[in-house]
Length: 120
Image (cartoon, rainbow, N blue to C red; front, side):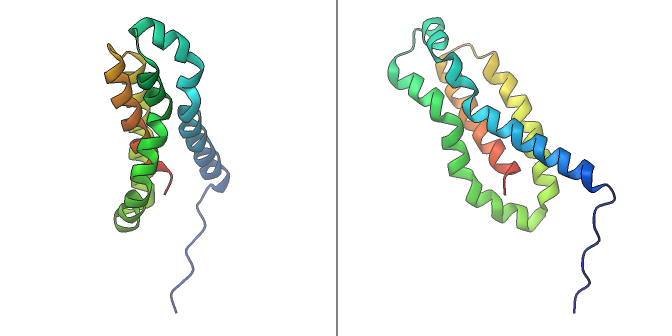
């Protein structure tokens, strides 16, 4: 019979980190929606491009979460969580300073994939 795993040394810190990680990923899902009219004006983007900006993060998340769950089982959830949160922050900065609407769409999809690393 396998031994029960030990509790983390600081469970409140672990819980706080997980809640903040989920908060970062969830805010990222809706962050661009507030700025869509300004994004359309700044880039001269049409409705289709703005729709892709709005759902890009959700698309990336939906495409990746099942596969990344298997990767997390194989290599460890903690490593994937840390990598996913780090990539989410970096790619969010890339999205914030995008030079074109196409670059913004790609950055939003990549942000969703990175968020998928944090969710499994």
